Length: 218
Image (tube, rainbow, N blue to C red; front, side, top):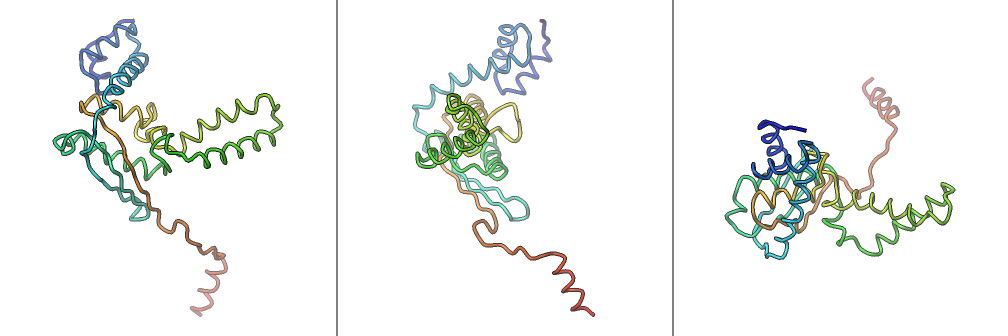
């Protein structure tokens, strides 16, 4: 399968990889665009992993407010130098991650942060669900394993599908930005506020409330 200079440029825009790397990916994948994207991501993960032993103590704390003040997020993202922390690319990364947290409501940054007690409780629920579905006992543990993966995708920020690009996870996005920026990037912590969360809320009957107001206006 052949490819053109336009294909190389589109691959570069999609992945943020260098022009020569994009060309090599298309050659290696016989011009298949989607395979080239995957090839670059796999290479990127390996390259980004080499940077994880570095110390990242600089960075930013950024915020995002959504729905007219109904949801708010604070997130700390680290890099290696103050110079990178001040760049537009890193600032945009911070905004993107804060928006992700607002939209997807993760509870933890990574799988490693999930408390053992929480995980065991989730597994008990999943086993009970499988039993209630009438699944054979010998396959229940495999089913639980698969559903735990989905649980991680729901509650762990790095495992979530990126809301601005469903073809990648947040972990993929961080790896791509690590390669683009050239420094280790890590999401250290976040907090998400939702208006009224945890408070008892009114559940008045709307029709009764309207009727009451109408009678009061007579």
